[in-house]
Length: 153
Ligand code: NI
Image 1 (tube, rainbow, N blue to C red):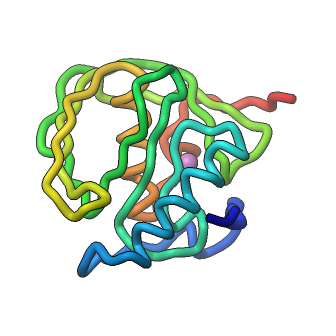
Image 2 (image 1 turned 180 degrees about the horizontal axis):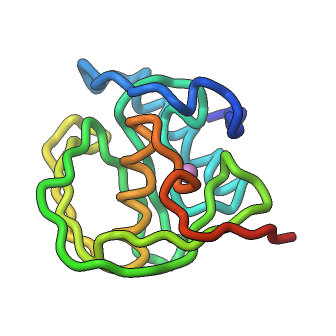
């Protein structure tokens, strides 16, 4: 495993639409391992492949509350319900947070690290993390949707 460099806002890489992962290979699994290592090192809760310069549709999430690692390859949000206002940050936008409205509930489908179909139902922070990371795959940053942003230490 290795730490990857996190791309920061201003880099065009964060503004591109990512392509699907054609096949879940050992190389993809190595990328996933590196992304988790990078996520923990940066003390984040989610990281999308374009944030480490890989233009493929995959992301990892770990709320670090004991709920475990979640990997979504070629994800699709198949259902959304409600709205919830909350604070959000992004490892690619250091030292800032903002307020963003997200669905209160989402159902998301994709492939796991073994290339097997996986589906999650999520509410609250997990739903927020899925939506935030999903947006990265389409070149969208939370800053585009935030009604307010402010600096943090
Ligand atoms: Ni982000």
